[in-house]
Image 1 (cartoon, rainbow, N blue to C red):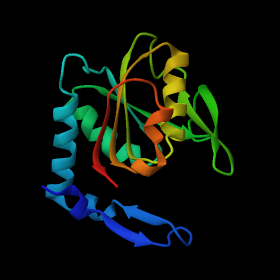
Image 2 (tube, one colour):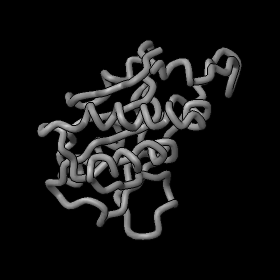
Image 3 (cartoon, one colour):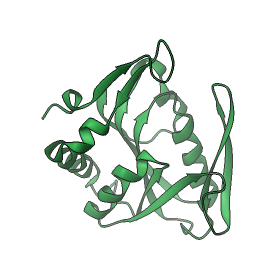
Length: 172
């Protein structure tokens, strides 16, 4: 199945000159959605990548991370924007193109030594994924790899990530 054909291009969104890759058209296609989760699970179903947890970043990482965790017989851990989690958190600030942002994870979400995969819909510059990896490292967990539906190769986000397997299903 050609996943790229299920992703809609929207020019000049959210600003002129940007080509937005819209996954809502992939999500609405039941065969495409199933195929996406199946592809991810096939890639991650190896002994080296056997995860205790799948981490998804707010918000589209939740969409793909939860069913992937189910398929891999792992737990799912959400990483959220600042102020969204109700219990004590670990936080990390990271650079955006214009300013900073903050990600948080519950302090009791992961035990040191846990084996984790990080999943999101898209990697562009790698800032959010890199910040999430740093949170995982601070907690003392083992980062096994990353999974992305879309990779924007020209932005070279991979170079900002740790040296672990990186799986992207569609490249632009």
